[in-house]
Length: 234
Image (cartoon, rainbow, N blue to C red; front, side, top):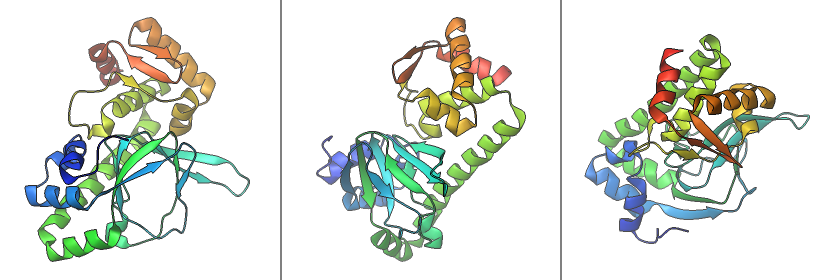
């Protein structure tokens, strides 16, 4: 686990989020002082449908798989929450129970702000509610973009968009894009509604074009600028 035992150490970790980096100092300080580090082992269940909201979480290390399971045991993968993403903020506004399942895809380190104390702080300092509305709006824009991509774009472009989104922390990475992302081909397929075979074939083509290189369990972006141009022009 990284050093997250005091507010100064937690503040450093949280600053990797572009959303957090843009917050007023009062709110930054309060969040750093009121987060609790949590460690989950790979395969551990974090929450499930019907669970009471227990706060918002920031992913420091690892990945959280957000999914829903049908009555016959089939899993629909909705998203991965990875550094520097937040999740759980919607319940700040409606107080509703969890609607999906969360699992530790790998060993995870999270920072959690308890629901009750955060709502109390925001009610006492209502000017800061807007910041969490912006966080929700950011997620909503990403969801609309995903729907648009699925409706209008060919599978190779959709896959390129998703790989680039992951590399830049879904637009919330406060720093340069990561060149290596840890993601399985079947997970990419599940998120995009594509078969593993289709994803594999597209990735082979991307390798042939010199955009990326595949290794076991990860993808390395070799030529970021060319890959971005492909995603923008196709």
